[in-house]
Image (tube, rainbow, N blue to C red):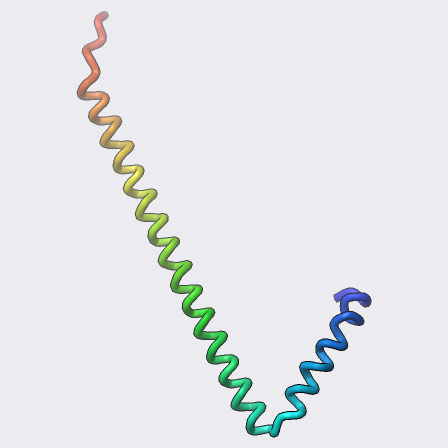
Length: 84
């Protein structure tokens, strides 16, 4: 991290550290555990949504390939014979 960014962030880090230090240790630990559980729940939900979207995209792509192949076969069957 650059010197300037570190200087700008230090007051915010100090305030955050002061907040946690002002809490009784057991309360701070419980609050931190709660925060971690909430964040992990959000992360899990986001991961699940992303996995669903990836699978959905793969299904659409496979259906599109199948449709193109059907169209090619139908076009080849419907094409008039090539006069030589």
